[in-house]
Length: 362
Image 1 (tube, one colour):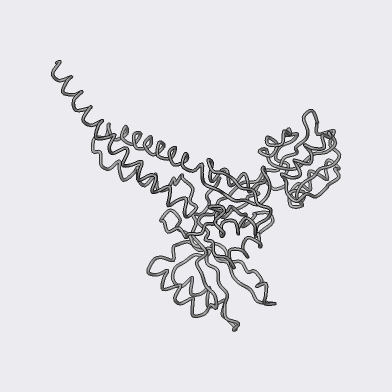
Image 2 (tube, rainbow, N blue to C red):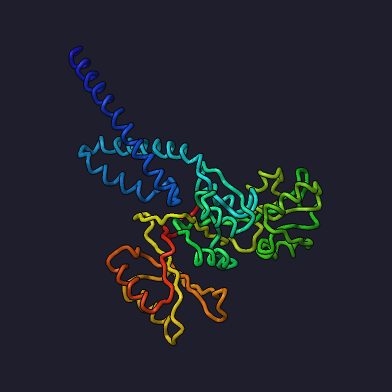
């Protein structure tokens, strides 16, 4: 009996020694993965990739009892790898437009939890800070389900050199925030961004409140905190209340419960990964009758489903437009390359602005 125990311990010690070597090797590979993700602006967690790895590796274990334990083991190894990558992420600089507590600040923190978030004065300054190498990635709003497209971001993507390497959806909840000790009945005036005021119009009318516009919701919250006046309240996020020491007087006061903003992550390098199966195309068409119809027909001809089609005016050319298109599928396939070649014949300017995974909530 003793000999079997000693033999088992010897095997375990040998395996543990080999596992330590392999663990270090795996973590060095995780470093390489992180460096790539940092370069292209991808988040650390890739749930689709992890699920595929687990499914593939589970097939390596035939024993059905051990297979379940092996899956748990793989999940734990991945969790450790993510934790290590999050530690490395401390040096990642993520630019956003606005002040601490703004929805872009919240979105950046959810996409990159351990990053350093850098506040910029406006969208262009945010974008340019990545172009110039001051920051690693930019997080900018591209569309709101209530207010529509964010034209300034789209214009920057069209005219600039950065790539979209992800689009993430943040559900927006507006709340009535007041100073400590205030009650809803004390409030006479609300301060917020015009869009937030519009979203909460029914609530404001019901309570018969005066309104004051602010450049963004976080600044509104800061002004209420600074004023220390129970009759003033801000309309902003719960996270903003925590930052500026306000209390939530009433939650979710926006008229539409379906209020989501899509944020684009922009980087200097284009990501090429199966985890980002959808593409963004930007193009202008020749100033000829039927040019746009031809372009749309070509996209459909190669089996691509368009999930978004928007037009934006060209700044220096009156009554001329560029087009923003989101499609299901990669342009790196044989069909995609043929499509791009055919599109180039009817488009004056054409580029793949980036790739993204659809409907990723943060």
